[in-house]
Amino acid sequence: MDLGVHVIEPEGTLDGTQTNAFREQVDSALQKGTKVLLIDLKEVTFVDSSGLGVLVACLKNARSASCKMYICSINDQIRMLFELTSMDRVFEVFADRAAFEATVLK
Image 1 (tube, one colour):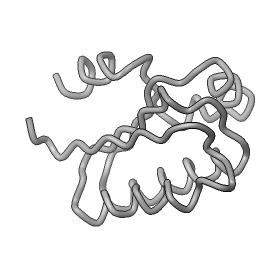
Image 2 (cartoon, rainbow, N blue to C red; image 1 turned 90 degrees about the vertical axis):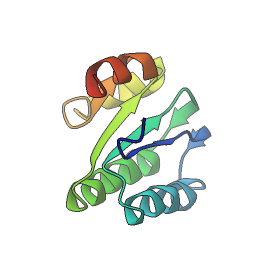
Image 3 (cartoon, rainbow, N blue to C red; image 1 turned 45 degrees about the vertical axis):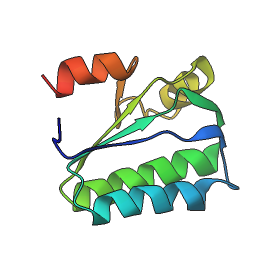
């Protein structure tokens, strides 16, 4: 099943200490011609403003590269952050990877 899907699974906190490494992973995937990028946040426990900023920057880069970017498996803290900042309207978020696959890869 090679539909150009690339999955990135950050772990722990997505904050100022992790943003460069995360951005490098996304940029590397985009340089390889990825057409669908899934950010699976199931192992991320906390996102701060820096983490949110890098997600937005990566979405912008993905769109510039004609790549669709999705997010799945967010916890309650991240969901609340997305809702408070209206990012739940910017990102397409799926409950889990199975929901993503059922919708996007059908």
